[in-house]
Image (cartoon, rainbow, N blue to C red; front, side, top):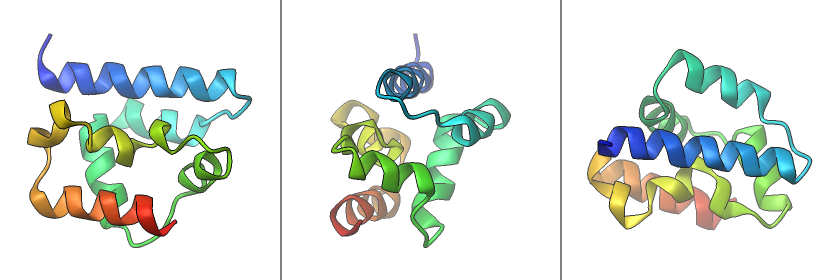
Length: 95
């Protein structure tokens, strides 16, 4: 399995965990069906706004389920630029 596929699997696992917690990220699921989660992640971190699901997961005390947190896992860092990773880190610390 390639790194892009591993990232996809990790994102899908996070989505499943969201459902187990009672949060249904249906809009996010639509986005990752239309585009690979790597592209979705890149759009999110440069968007300048905190998406609803990002805020909800942080309110629930589950920031590790956000796409930003998954981006920052050491095994996935090579999929993103330094500025994208910095933006993800900034978002996690400033929500």
